Length: 148
View 1 (tube, helix red, strand yellow):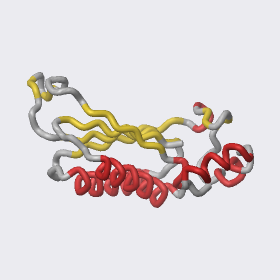
View 2 (tube, one colour; view 1 turned 180 degrees about the vertical axis):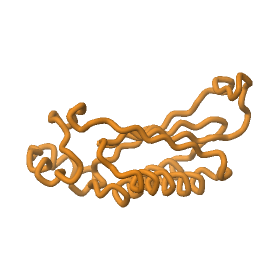
View 3 (tube, rainbow, N blue to C red; view 1 turned 180 degrees about the horizontal axis):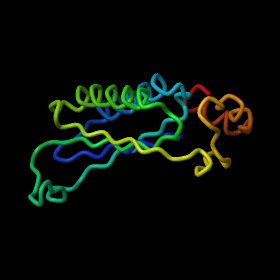
């Protein structure tokens, strides 16, 4: 499951902005990688004032950093499209300038991740892997309004 952490510096996001960003990242990931949307999870963190430095000096400019951990096996073009989409949509949702969103994507081999109690499948094998979900887990998704 791709895990994205959105860290803000000198930016206070509203609940609506967090929802827009989470939706944007989920859609960008699914569109560019082909992975199901329910795979994506997004965490938000806000840096405390005075805890971010650039070039050894305190930063007072708004920034949004998006760190994505994704399964290895994606083509360079897919990752570039993913980063471009995330950058553009996060910038709009957060209301920051075009140079104030930084996006990092890091590959992790599928066999090095366990989610939902099982090692993740290789990209493109999600449908077979999904068949192993328990009825209880499928019910959890349905109650949350997530399509699996």
